[in-house]
Length: 503
Ligand code: 0RQ
Image (cartoon, rainbow, N blue to C red; front, side, top):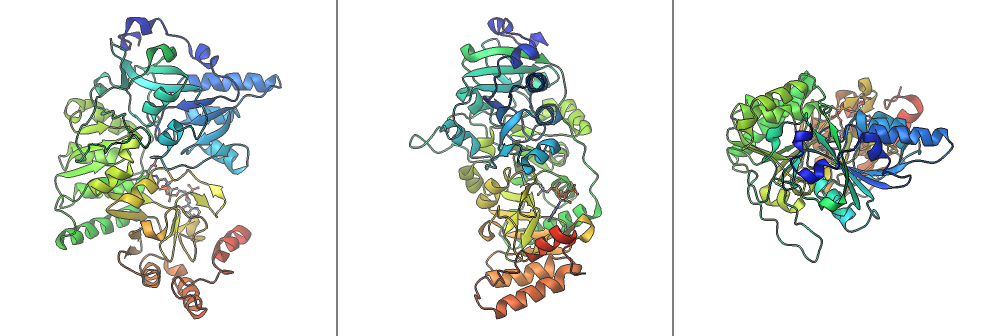
């Protein structure tokens, strides 16, 4: 793997993962690369975890403050969490051990919009960044860094950290060189200029990451693949939600509210998102474009089939089979896929300008269209808001999707009042469950409530929701009627009995 480092001086900086871990001290803030299971460091986190375990065995404290792009994988978040080595985590994570620690109060977590994290770190809101630990695919002869399968927050971590540790991963395709477009001049107000991107598929900068070479404290060589999670084949639930969204697109084209090739598509992670993209494969739309944060199998296949002309993302998160297709066709894909910093993919200015169609999954919505994407029963963190807020608030069209019930029907995903607010009624235009679609645009809260109950709620819960709404209307406060002492009673009942239904 040493040949991936073309710069002679930097080859002298090759060290072991253990030597790299020795540079990390208890209490340090470490900026780590990685975005939804792509581009995270594969070797140094395990060595930090061992160091933490040794310290704990000797009765000494050892924990780091960990800030990433988004979720990493078991070899990073997982191994560190199991070693009890994380005191603070931001901005998005999906590791089960760490989730339990967060919900048990053993690790502090701050949920931040993915477009905000870099500027807040640059501005110093998180204090100093002691070390950046960043995976790259290689280093050029003149010391420029070639991004791996995720760019995420790397621009800012490399700029802001006092010391840098690189992992150069020989498993990442060498032909990734040239695929990224690293615009790194957003800066901070009052020194900001418009970002000169006017089309989803445009390139506006250079393909390399830059780092002051004197800050590089060590380079660790690795040869390991990304998480590469598998997707389930779309089930009936996902297919039904996808089919309704595609019908809605056709209707909007007919009404002249969308062009025939739609507008750039953003799709969240998970099986429903993937099913919508799979559905577009057989749909009537051509010359599609993608402007998303995570590019998964579904979007790759739209590009390979010629349905989509270009897509940009901050991370390429593929199943093992899709990664094979990607590597096989990389020569053709290099001009069509653009990897950008997450501050660009999720940028409100650009999402608004490009007129993105945002599609994200949710945990629950209430009868007025407020959405909870993050909390289970109002108190326990699931993953985090991720980029859903960046897209929902600024999109031309914002969709939220979910099955109408969870846990075998014991939970209604349509409730009187959400138990946590991530996306307010002002940011939610279309709600879709397998039961149906509610187009909330241009509607008052009470008009919305009737539509959501009739179209999206599961039949087992529809009457109870109507009853709640009817009684709330009689109680007065007729703009957004509620019974405040009952609004969260469905959640309370679930907490007490394991079922939202009245037995
Ligand atoms: O739990 O696996 O224990 O059964 O929540 O639910 O239906 O499998 O849905 O995997 O698409 O996740 C919102 C969490 C949906 C995700 C969320 C339980 C359910 C199951 C998962 P089990 P599903 P998904 C791009 C955009 C925020 C970030 C975002 C997410 C588990 O999409 O994290 O959008 N979004 N980012 O049983 C209690 C309810 C429930 C519930 C579902 N109402 N109450 N539990 N579940 N509904 C990516 C990035 O930003 C990086």
